[in-house]
Length: 245
Image (cartoon, rainbow, N blue to C red; front, side):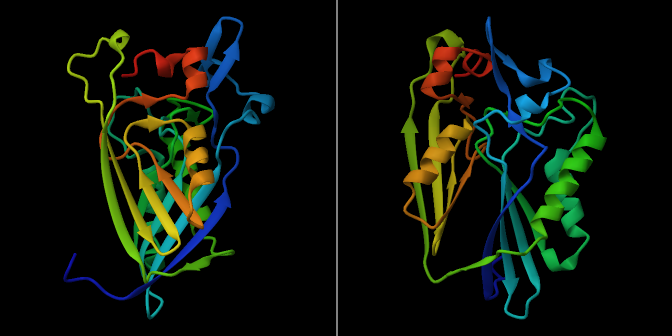
């Protein structure tokens, strides 16, 4: 990697991908249920919030315009092929395969967001759905309208570790509840890496407080400390506050 270093430009873009994600925690008389138990999903449920359907794309290009890398950040559980007896790279892998078909994209990367409470409309429906979702993401990533240049003169890295208390009712022997948090700054762009599965509300709150022009909050990174629900979710109950650490 060091031998391959070269000067490059960085561009940032934000688009919307509708129809592929929803707030999966649905309140009913008995508490909170998961969206996959309410099929088919109605238009009303698809419109429920909070949900973040933005797709962030970061493009790195050489000074001659050649593609070096395309980083795509989206927010959704990859569960189209959950519980099926095969190995799959799911919709992130399908997206990468599609982007690799064009040399102009360079090496594709996928970063998931704070998707602790965000699912696709269907779960365990098979590879066709993962393929469709991945291709839709790739098309969004290749749309360059609205790109803004990122000043790459400033680069910073920060890391912090916070020991969180494990909930005794989770009954997890020797739980790993050490939250490892990392952040990268490139000019006006900040990328924050959070462990476990934070809820979308947490990421949106971080963005509101961020001093940077562009902020990407990455979930499922560093180490696995389980779900990180909001205070409201703990009061409401539901799957994410049950088995979580």
